[in-house]
Length: 289
Image (cartoon, rainbow, N blue to C red; front, side, top):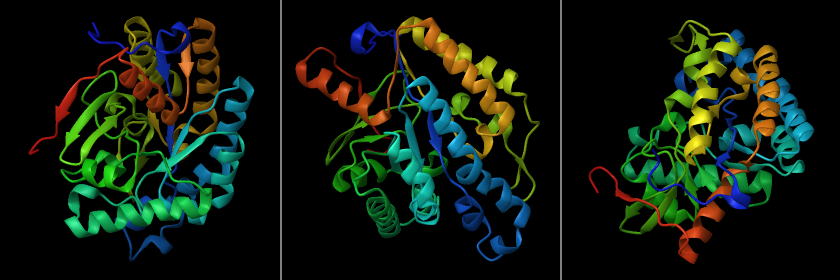
């Protein structure tokens, strides 16, 4: 059903990368800049991510011996350097996710360039390295984003939803590697409920949410795809939810032939396949391009 599966390392049937967007209170300050300081309950929910959930998530990754990817807004990296440092100590990737979770496709040309540069610089100061990848906050990738990312030296994007395997975005500045996911792999619809943040959906049980994600995983395993959850520590890192995920990681490993890797390593593998001629990706022009 996937016409052009990637040859994954060591005969793996699929690649898997849990990606956690550590937004913390950035989304609160973006949505309510004048009132955020007074929205104490909402802030406590969001702070649960770096303070409680991230250490729990890292414990599970350490238990299973896997390394994964975190996307962190620059403001959050500056506010919670201890969380970022803990990720790096365990060998995980920390990549870019805006500065204050601003929405690129709602910005002017000048502002998008400014905030991208500021977010990258903030991460470089905290991590000591250039981020390899980027995810547009709330998937709000603009018609300028791909070219700006290439100009900035970003290796891959993880914002779009156009395939089940990596593909290339064609721009006047070159081709950007896209590592796609989709809304069905996001934890926001399953778990997010906050009147103060204007999103109130019926909350699913962890088991019910994982029914969907497991079906997605089995399909990717069957046909050679790329399985990328788009999760948030303050949501998926809650106790019962992460307990379920801890169990499911074990189940995935028991199934076998799954390559768990940070997105930066997946991107590097895909580029090697392209350069060596062992795999050719689909190339797409962006709308309006």
